[in-house]
Length: 122
Image (cartoon, rainbow, N blue to C red):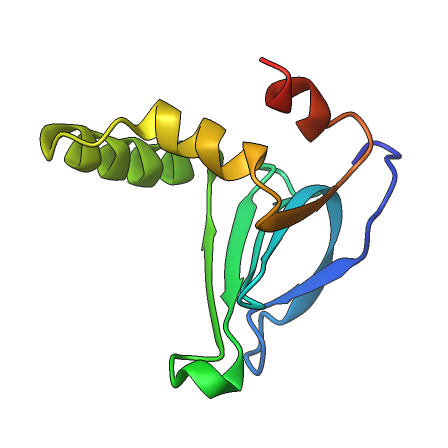
């Protein structure tokens, strides 16, 4: 593997014989005003796998943490299918994304090389 900056580690296969830690090499994290935390992390493995995580405050009664670990192709398939679903329901996904980043309702943190401010100005 190439020598790249690590932003921490993710444990995959927890509790199994395949358990291991993999470096996070890129990430975007969004903390919403309701204290919900959504993270997308790229891992330093052969596939550059992606882990998406949603952490909910205990007060919501929802699952406190949900995660999915996918190849980039599978993550794209999942998201594009969801975007298609929303579009078929008449929802303008691009406007929703732009609206969510232009408000002060979300605090973002991200790895070097990513810049949310550039998107806010578009």
